[in-house]
Amino acid sequence: MDYNFAYLDEQSKRAIRRSLLKAVAIPGHQIPFASREMPLPYGWGTGGIQLTAAIIGKDDVLKVIDQGADDTTNAVSIRQFFARVAGVASTTKTRLASIIQTRHRIPETALQGGQIMVYQVPMPEPLFKLEPRRTETRMLHALGDYSLMYLQLYDHITRYGRVAIGYDYPVMVHDRYLMSPSPIPAFDVPKMHMSPALQLFGAGREKRLYAVPPYTRVVPLAFADYPFAPVQAQAPCAICGSSSSYKDEIILDDRGTRQYVCSDTDYCEQHPC
Amino acid sequence: MLTSSSQTHTPTPTTAPGPAIIAQSLHFRFGSQMVLRDVSLEVFPGEVLAIVGESGSGKSTLLNLLYGNLQPCQGSVHAIGNAGLQPLASLSQQTLRQLQRSRWGYVCQNPRDALRMAISASGNIIERPMAMGLRHYATLRQEARHWLEKVEIDPARLDDLPGTFSGGMLQRLQIARTLISQPALLYLDEPTSGLDVSVQAALLDLLRKLVSNEQMAVLLVTHDLAVARLLAQRIAVMRRGEIIEAGLADQVLDDPRHPYTQLLVSSVLPA
Image (cartoon, rainbow over all chains, first blue to last red; front, side):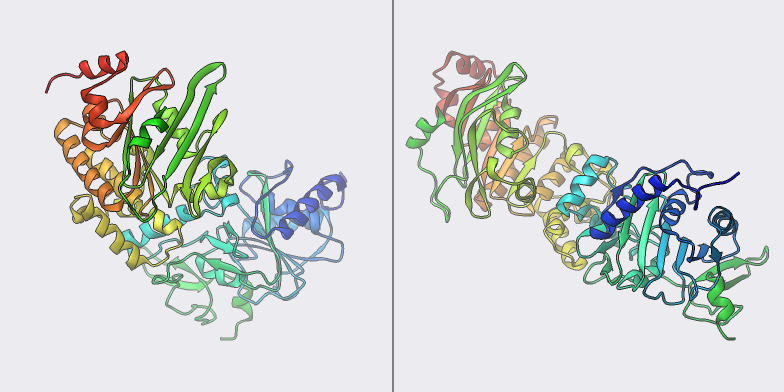
């Protein structure tokens, strides 16, 4: 059976691109879009796939990562999906990719101008745990009133002595909108700031997309006397020895012996021992 | 109607001598139901105006109009803003919200409606300064402790959740959280009903102290004449959406002119 190039029909892709243009024009602002049914369940990256489908061309080189790895189920399936419906080249090398679709990580290798990051987002609304009403969160965004989120940080410091948000750390984009950076670790948030790459975010189930254009300020929320301080594994990578990368913690036996390895498999392979 | 009586009343001299809020011939209706008819009033800094009347007389609706949550069908409200008196109708939603959480304060009957029950007591108290841009944890914490002491709650309860507080403490917490921004205009909607008598007395005492220290203009809505007598300098009696009698508190309570006010005053249970 033949599909249109990149699975979605041209009109659907056009509608998504139009919303994307709006998203790029208003950094960090959530734009509604007509999310289509995709041949995989919500939560598996339908938002990211639709965005990728809308922007991918025949000359693009696609890299898909899931939790930093190129060889996990989600990453392999999405890569195969686009190989089949678009016939584009794929790579595991961050340097060579023109589009990088990702879940939970930003590659360790610095991004370059011209590259596009596509994030899979489960919940685009950063305030949803604090304010259940969508009408009200829209109002709070419009008024730029984010004291609720600061209240959350305050309570974290009071209870745990630090801001105990490990992933999906709330950020201010272009000094205007509070944005969920998708569930990437807080460790990765500084990579978004002033990145030369275009960053697109798609939430399929929630039917929202948003964007961070190249060279845009992305600043994590913090207090003056409690600056942003993400936690990181202290041990170097057991495979490549890198001490600067983000690590996965792997339990090795029943006695709790553990090992730390790079979560970014591409970076780990290239990093000299 | 109240404007006539306020001419005889000279407000205590303050830095801002004019009234903090003026309402002129307000009319309001819900559908075909007329809720307020030609209500006018003004309140000066350092003065407490009690609005009393039976339930359904339009007290809370009036308070909501004066607070900017509802728009009158006719008439206007001018309230003190960042630059003197401003007509509420001309304020953008953004300015209105900003004023509501800095220059004005609203204490509602049920503290659970206003407080964030999932956030610690101190977090509740410092929400206003944080919304106004204070981003220093240690300073915020110090402020929270200071205000907790000011409303006479044990500072050891600083980080407890409001759910663990008693009803009277919750109301104190709401008052601390409202007064921390030192509002020029305070709206109290039945602040002590639902509390037992001894707690009520302590809370009223506290409120009176705070209000007179800060030279706030206070609008107090209550159905309890004893509360009005204790706190207010002036009283406006409402019935079926109209102010039927207004004047100095002692004058209205001791020498009521309108038959309805006479009924209201005489129906208070003897202590």
